[in-house]
Each structure stands twice: as structure tokens, then as C-alpha cells.
Amino acid sequence: MTTVFLKREVARRVFAKELMSSTYTIRDESEKSPLYVLTPLGLKCNRVFIIGVLTEKEERGEDGNIYRIRVIDQTGSFIGYVGKYQPEAYEALEDIDTLTLVALTAKVRVFEGETGKFVTLRPETISIADPESRDYWVMETAVQSLERIREMKKGESETAKLAMEVYNTDLEEYKRVVKEAVERVMEDYGEFDVEEEMLEEEEEEEELELNEDEDLSFEEEEIDLTELLKD
Amino acid sequence: MDRVEKLAEQIFEDYKDYGVDRREIVEKLKKLLIEFRVPENEALRTIRNYIIREYGAPATIRREKITKIEEIKEPNKWVTVKAKVIQLWESSSPSIAQVGLIGDETGYIRFLVWTKAKKPPVEEGKSYIFRNVVVDDFGGVLRLNVTKISEIEEIDEDIKVKPPEDVSEEVEVVGALVAIQQNSGLIQRCSVEGCNRVIKMGKCPEHGKTKPKDDLRIKGVLDDGYRTYEVIINEEGVKALTGIDLEKAKKIAEETLDRNAVLIELKKMLLGKYLRVVGTATPRYLIARHVEFFKPDIRKEIEKVRALLEEV
Image (tube, rainbow over all chains, first blue to last red; front, top):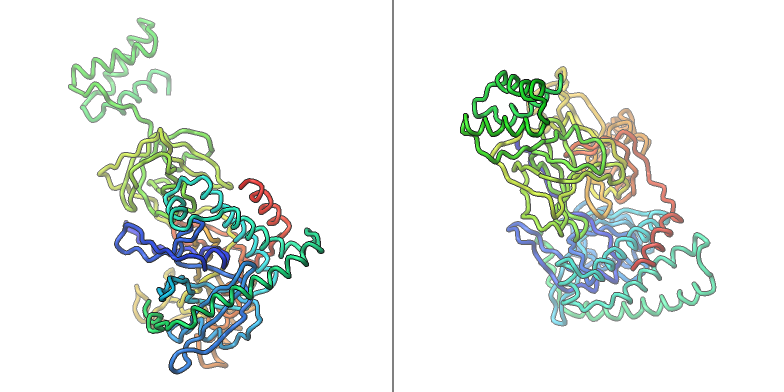
């Protein structure tokens, strides 16, 4: 009996800050290995599952047949491109307005621009999410991020060593980012000092604006969208 | 079986390939143990030496007790199993080199090879003897741990594994439904007695063109960020989640003149949702017996995060 099992890439749980700071790509030793992104916390990923707020949805491409989207979580923003060649995500997106909480499963892509490499998402599914699921997502993503920080501190695994070499990651900073992300959610569960929380909120807005400025510089570059058509 | 018979059986098992006579062993053992009253280990050694001399058997036969997988029932036991690697999964942690499922003719068990064990990787479809592996209990699921002191030996024998349908394991999984496959929704099955296969392009893979009967199901992927499960949800489960049963699904198809409309509707309602599934895990599928939208206890999750924050 020979049974062939298909191996499907796991949709990783990763905050925007960690994923969008990634610039390094790797493949496994096997021939058919897909291209993975190596994050600053040593995660090798090529698919993610995210719950966040859809804040932008712009038509791009020659016939406007590609949407460029921005989804923000508690740490920053993800940029994605959805074309008609991903009919499921494209059609679902047509019915979703901005400022809606969405869940998306996406492939991770890396583009090389003149100012360096940056990560974009190619969503496979998009759907409307509820706040409770978002809270759970933040928690599981926090847990998995902290587990990665723990592995980075141990520094035993190959990917952890490589990530440290490539990014010289400031682990304390990532720990703080995770803590803040969780605290933003904890407020709803009466687990956090409100005054302190309000101060943090102001900080958060500043951070977001900064992120947008950064992303604008990407937009000025000519991105060859035909790349997106390739699988 | 009396003690003599038992000991004789052990020796016979070790040397049966060398043409030894079971009756002869029993007689000699009786003589040594009952007549001469020598200690058991001395009696065994005497007989082994005799066999080595008379039958030309190798002096270093490794007495190896191979445990059948179905006999593995509790943690903290050291065992040696002869098994085929059925499936390898992606390791969820750098400290685990390999993780997957092995099986023999009696059952299946999960196994993992710790990175620190420094073993050459095993391959899917190949058979091995896993020596001195220790059983542990991981959230109610028994696993075999290959550690530094374990041994993995590849063997030529192609171990026949128990057909997957016969094996089941009760599990509970919480994950996001990240994909729903095309052959989901309102499907057709072959109506030939006992067949029930899904009809593709108007044909049953076994019986060709047959009279189809409608069914409602979801074949999808549940993902918890560490691994994926191919989940199958039957009509009852689909109804529990969406309120759509077979009748309603047929109605949707009739009204829209499109059987696919059911699938589109199900995708809209379920993709990206966290589900809690209790069901039977076969090596390939997770067959849902009970399925519901997961209701997280966020406070409990916060505690988990806090504990980890303190640890790192």
C-alpha cells in the first residue's frame, strides 16, 4: 500500500511588525521546496492566517483588475494584492467595505524593489471576522511569537541562528511589541489599567502614521505587477 | 503455559530460523531445571551454547522484543517497534527534527525524533526498527520519542500496515478553517449498494455512470498555526454550523439553477472561522463527529500569554 499524502504549508500566526520586517528568503534542501520568508524571529513561512482591519482597498492594474489592500493588526500593517486570478478572494473582497474586520489566509511573497526587499501578501481567502475571533487571533499569535522569541534566546535551531545573523534581532523590542498588542485586547476584558492604556493608544496612532509613510515610499517604486500572475 | 514451556518458546523464537527442534529444547530445559535444579540463566546459557555449536547459529543473536503498536497503551515505557513511516509532518519546533506517524500491522502511533538525538532522517514509505524509544503522553495522545540513546535501523522488509479506515483516534482540534475544497457543498454519491463514492464528472470512479444521490459535506483544511488537518464535516455538522441541511441545499441549488451556489454560500459563512472539532483522526483525515464555532475563553488565553511573557 502506498498512500500519498499531500503536504500543505501551515498558515503561520505572525504579527505585521514581524512579517513586514522580513527581507530574507530561503528554500529547503529538497528540490520542490517552496520559497519561504525568514522572519526576524526565525520563523520560516510561506502562508499566514491573519485577522485585522481592512483599511484600504484600491483598484490597481491596467484594467483595475487588481486590488491593493492594507490590513492592520495591533502592531502594524500588512499589504496585499488580490487579482482576478484568485477568484475566491477577489469576489469575496468585492463585497467587503473598508474599516471591516477581516480574516485572511494568504501566501507570502517577497518583492525586490530598488530600496530593498519587502513582503506582500497574496490572499487566498478573505472573509468578515468578529471581534472575539480577532481577540483569539491576537492571543494565539502572541503565544506563537513568544515561543519564537524563546527559541531565538536559546539560539539552538538553524533558523534561529540564521535569523539572528541576518537581522541582529532586538528580542526585547519584539517582546514589548507582543506585550503591547496583547494589552490592547486585554482592556476589553478588564485586565488592564485604563489610564495607562489610553496613553498607549496615542502612541499607537503615531506609530501607524509612521508606518504609512514608510509604505508610501514603496508605492513610488514601479512594481511589476505581472509578477503577481505567477504562482 | 508453564515456566519451562515459556523459556523454551523464547529460545525457539530466537533460533527457529536455524532449524532447531522445539521438543529437543523443552527436554533439555526440563532436564536442567527440574532434574539438575540449575538456575534459569545458566540453563538458558547452556542451551544457547548448545544450539550455537550444533546448529551453527551466530553467537550474538540479539534478543529483541518487538512491541506491536496496539500493545502500546501507557506512557513512560521503553519499547522497540518495527514499523513503517506513514507520514511526516512539519515540525512545529526547532527542537524536534522530525514528527509524524508510523504504523505496523496492528495500528498507528505518532512519533517524534528530537533534534538532540542527532539521527539521520527517516523517509516516508520506508520501514525501520525503532529501538529503545520511550512512550510519552502529549495531551492525551501517546507518542514514541526517539532520543539520543534510541536507535533507528532501516530494514528491507516492507511492513504491511493496517488499512487507515480501521484505525481511529479520538481528538479535539481548534483551528481556523483556512480552505474549503472544491468537492464540497452539494455533492453526488454513487447509489450502488455499499459504494457511496463521490461522483466526479458524472461518473463513479468504480461503477461509471450510475444513478446519483445527493449529499452535503465539507472537505476543508483546519489550521492551528502549527499543523493542518484535512477535515471532513458531514451533513449534520454543516447543518449545526450554518443551518443549511440537505433539503435546504437542494432548494438553494434549484432556486439559483446552480449546484455550486451552495458551496459559495458555505464558503462565505465558514472560511476564516475558528472551529472546534471533536472527531476521529485517521492518518489522512479528521472526520468530524461534533463541530461548532469555537468560543474562546480570552481570559485563559491571556494567562497563557502572561506565563510566556514571564518565561522569556
